[in-house]
Length: 260
Ligand SMILES: [Zn+2]
Image 1 (cartoon, protein in one colour):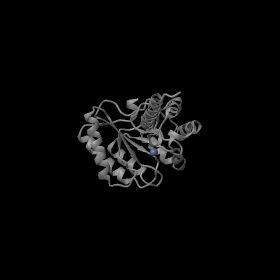
Image 2: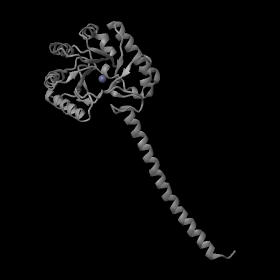
Image 3: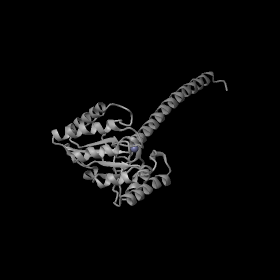
């Protein structure tokens, strides 16, 4: 009773606490947002960054910078795969084809032609979904059904798998491993699914190979001969130049099987 000074002090203190609380709340909110941002950023890195190993081992390349793997996704495609096969045969180069199951169903003879030419064959799912956000059951079905189809159609064991868009999460890598598949991404991207002149594709590959040589690692080049009926001739024409480059520089063509 009758302690005005104390009352003022309490009021002041309460106000200050309120001020501090607000400030603390802001700092906490900033910290949580930053952590959430890092967590989301970390998830995107682990799931989508082509060379990330955070969700499990992904084959990229070895440490011999003279080794180059040419990999072609989304086929078989009657509008480009035959021309590509002819070019690779002419130069006696063995490449890798990550085939989409539903395209193999449409073009089984062309898929068999790729395999008969001695190229490495990989599983690229049945319908090309983003596996990073499909149910576990869908992930398993996409990979397992495609493997069964490829093995039935081609009569050979499949050992390589490339997730569409390079997107994965632990269940994707586990489902692939359970089928004896090595998951493969890339370290040179050409964005050749977008229309562009072959010279632009060549330039990206040349720059990528130089960058990999600086870092003492092989080159795993992502190209596309599919999807179905897409005009992929710039990618085929770029391949011719990259092969000539490689022979002049004494590089060797390998498949990702060399790096598992
Ligand atoms: Zn693809």
